[in-house]
Length: 346
Image (tube, rainbow, N blue to C red; front, side, top):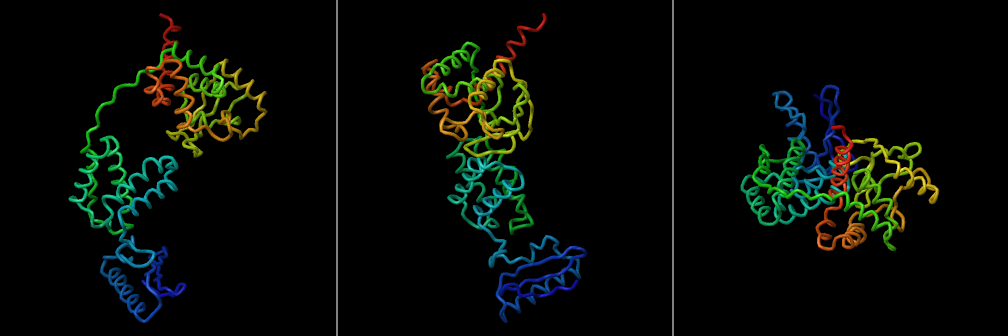
């Protein structure tokens, strides 16, 4: 193995070949006599490891720990932030998930574990678990600890950490209390919602949108992200393969799987009238917000949805308004199952 010391923009780096693979290792020091001496020491270390069979092919052993841009000692919050960027770039995690699931973990680590990641062991993890038990729900704590464990697994061989992942089996410590099953809307309630929004002077604009949700059972973001080019001939089908969440366009659904659904005649007729009225382009949203752009689920729920439910059933409006997505989809499935049972031969 022949290792060369090079000057790259005033800073030193090593370059060598490991078989057919070429390696470049930035040393994080300037090209000075002292820097050259450090480079010679690092070069000799790599060559000795190669000759004795202790060569680290990940190069982590040889990378600088606390100096330069390639430092491998890193604070826990920064480590998780880099993990979040990796998940978004290479694993397809949506921006809304990064905002709602990953960034709160960064903030929590900044507050309670703002120290070098390689110094975090069992005692620090136990303290973090105790804080989670006092401040957040078991379900949220379980997910956050599981994501931190995944972060540590990802960072192995990239950054200096403890040999054993201290977050292994931490998530199982949290008990998740059972949730009461959401009571779905009845067929009569769904019909009342449809008729109420259709006649409401302010929110009847969303009548077609609600009708599409209640007749198909697709998720809110899937309906909000539906475009005219996704509809089949004569509006008999709709391709569900994209979604919009918190204003962010995702080129996939929540499950990552696309599907084509059949649309009932009532929806086909409504979509035809809608097309004739709007004369949209293929890339236009089928159900845009009043002022254009995508419908925001938070605003829709707090304004339109809650108002309509208060008219239909004032006593349960608050509970139902918080469950817009699951209630509509779940109610549709129950309504469909009920109709199917009634029409099935005995």
